[in-house]
Every structure is written in structure tokens, then in C-alpha cells.
Image (cartoon, rainbow over all chains, first blue to last red; front, side):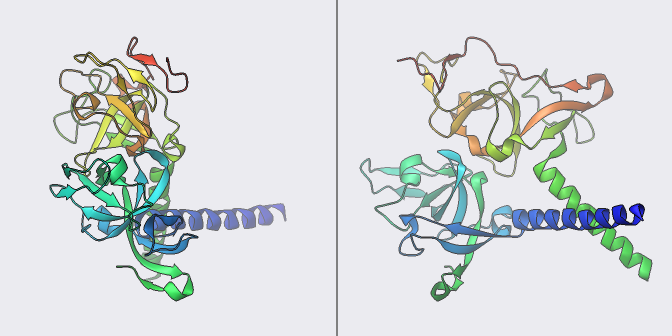
Length: 153
Length: 169
């Protein structure tokens, strides 16, 4: 009797472990659902948090293009994930419109991230070009709010 | 037919669990390049060189300590990984050989150097790098057996003049 119950528990436990592993691998390597909160991507995304679907493949294959919206680890705070648009790739020259002004050539292996909200975004204008190794994925679909449902361009 | 499908299913589940463990817990890696000699030794091909045990836990909350040997994504060549020693973290003021001024490590960045100072390309060339690039801590060499043992977290003395938490003003 006890053996059968232990065997049941082990079976359920194994199923849970497999489920957790599947979700972990799927969200790290295929698709992830994330929220983008804050004003930096207005008017594209709302302040209070849109729910977005990020695909991992483009970043892994190095097929990111100017204009893509991406999720990335912040160079100024490793615990933070930021949502910004790619305005330049390695080798591009960016003309920086800010207090410091001037232009910057994006070094090898780096990208220029900028929020759509010109005035209220902390991005490459502040922390410089970002290593593309910090990019997590490309945002390609919005699933919340309902009126914003659809592809992100 | 039944057994082939069952085998495929078991293999897929095994691979998935293996990938999850390797991403989040521990994994193995083969050392390449001589930038960490003599601590870690590489071979002339992928068949030779130290096999390292990587601890993925510090990568979750970035709980790396000064002196740890770390595995990180290369800032200039994102398809490559680097193995270096973590020398300083955000806020630290450190002495850099060849520079007169002290370097302060900016917020969110860190300073890494290879033990083999003569050949290593590291923060001395490229400056402080984002801490978010650090993905794992090297805890042990597991192969070859003659070199089996812990990889110690050692901070070279005299480099850090002030710690981030207690700035000297």
C-alpha cells in the first residue's frame, strides 16, 4: 500500500519536474512572455505595462535589425531588464541628440538602444552602446491590453 | 514501432532536463585560450584542456564575489565566451598597472582580468564591462585528474583602493 502511494508521489513529482524544465527551456530559448512597464517606450507601449511576447531566436542567430524592439539586461543594473528599440548596429555612426551631443561610432559587438519616448528614457544616450550579448530577445507581439493585440513593428 | 517512439520521447525529456540543469544549475566547459594560465590550462584543440565545473547560481542574482573566476559573454564578440577573474565591482576604486589615475568602476559594471597578464585581453584593454555579461562561476577543474581541484577565489592584493560600499572621500 505504502509502496503504491510513494510510487504515485514520485510519478507526480517527475511530471512536475518535467513541466518546470520544459517551461524553463522554452522561455529561455524559444518564446518568453514579459511585461514592459514605464514611460520609456511611449507611445508604442503603455506606462502601466503591456504584456509582450519576446522571441529568442533572432538574437541567438544574430539577426537583429535596426528598428527592432528588444528586451535587454541593463548595463547599469544587471538585475534589470529593459525594453528599448535598436537604433544602430555595430559600425553604424549615431548622431546623439542630447546635452552632450556629438556622434558616436558603435563598436564591434555593440548596439545602440533608445526608448521611443525621447524625453523620458534612460538608454544608450546615458550608458553608451550596449554589448549585443546583453540582448535577450526581440519583442514581436503584444497580447495585452486587448486593444493593442497584434504584431509589434 | 512502439519502442522507437518511447525511446524518442525519453530522449527528448532527458535532453530538456539536461538543458535546464545546464542553464540554471551546473554545467561543464572546456577551457580554451591561455589568458587564465597557470590557474586554468587550455589545450591545442577542443579535445584537450582543462574541463571546468561551472556554477550557474551566482548568475541569477549576480552574487559574484571579488576574486571569483567567472565565465562571461564577450562584449565585443558576442558569439564567444571569456574566462577571467573578477577583480572589482561597481563603486570600487582600483589601481591599474600602467595608469597613474585610479579607475572607479561605474554602476552596474565590473572589472575583470585574466591571470596571465601578458596575453590576456580584458578590462585593462576594454575598460569596465557590464556585470550582466557574467553568467557563471568556475568552481572546479574536473579533468584531467592530475589537475582536479577547487578553483580558488583569490583577490590580488593592493589593487582595490576603496570598496564600493565604503568609498574613501
